[in-house]
Length: 212
Figure 1 (cartoon, rainbow, N blue to C red):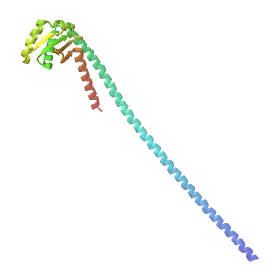
Figure 2: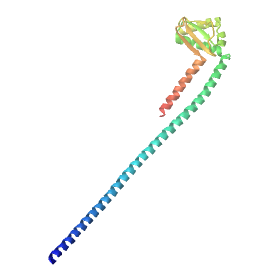
Figure 3: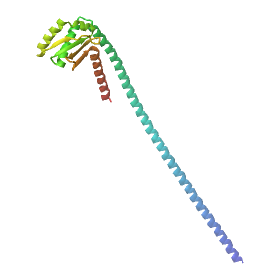
């Protein structure tokens, strides 16, 4: 009996030893797994943090780029506004100068130049001229006859200037029509001034585009 009991005690001790060993192994495995989980969590957290920081940096750079672009656009807009304001003042001064010219003694010479421009544009022909109310009064029959002769010699073809029955609806300049009204040239001051204004505005727009 003693041998059997001794054997049972040894067996029980061995079982306990094995159980403790397995428990320690499991505990160590659990610890290692816990450490691995913690490391994985750290890596994932670092990756997420880096991704968030990367997105934040990209967003910050995008915001800086947008702000720079906005600042550039604002500067261009202010520059354009300043030019427009300056040009508006120039146009007002130019219009005043032209209105003063209509009332000056030099206006007859200007009308003669516009009549010559009509011949250059429409060709030697019978041309009907109409000017603003004051200029229309200056287009006397005698004066138009003399201009016709001078223009015919200058352009090498028959030119006949005639006065329209009514003045042009303008405050300065002249309208010329070929007989029959098929072709005409509008050389009135308001139209010429607006054409110059549009041309300058196009030049400003072109300059702004080239500055980009």
